[in-house]
Length: 110
Image (cartoon, rainbow, N blue to C red; front, side, top):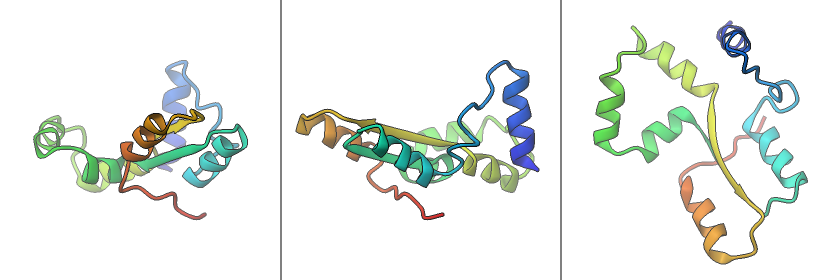
């Protein structure tokens, strides 16, 4: 149900999630980037990113926003979004930057 609400929300804003049906998971996104020739792909759902990548100071700031009455609702929302970094650069520096962007993340199986 949450997914349907989020999908409608973005459609109503005039920003529909066009690729969500073809690439509904991080695994599908990884394969998409791989098929497009990207050498390196890092990704994380927003909850994992929040827990592992944000500083304590930033976590406190986010908590102060009081977006949700319950932690469970916020947690569910974060599992539906992800951040990613991909590159097809041949330079070691760009590849390392992309890998280290989310160094604790893993792409889950389906």
